[in-house]
Length: 115
Image (cartoon, rainbow, N blue to C red; front, side, top):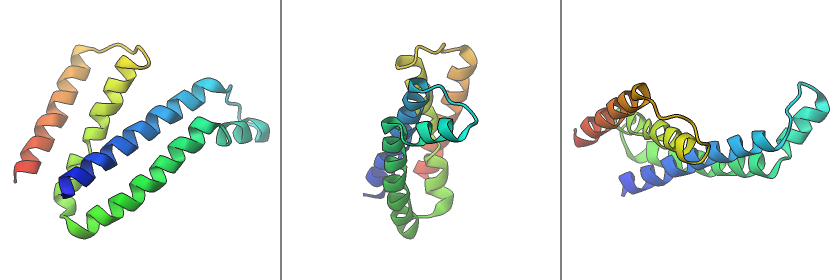
């Protein structure tokens, strides 16, 4: 059950990042009061923040039931989802270095989960 919750947590975090990226694309962010308010009240930014609140509450529950040294490294799978979102949603390049880096993250999460 913890792994299912951890998977949901990972999805929430990655989705929050995607929404934040979409939100920053919708406004021209400037280092002014107006620019900051425009960014903060953007629906994508608010939605991503809401997902992060839910993910944090879920993370606290996970921490109360599982070993930090096990679940925290597995949470690095967020980086895999974020990179894939960058490639498939935002048309970013998928390089050999990204492939190798993600492979190591996935492999590391696998070994830690098996322990």
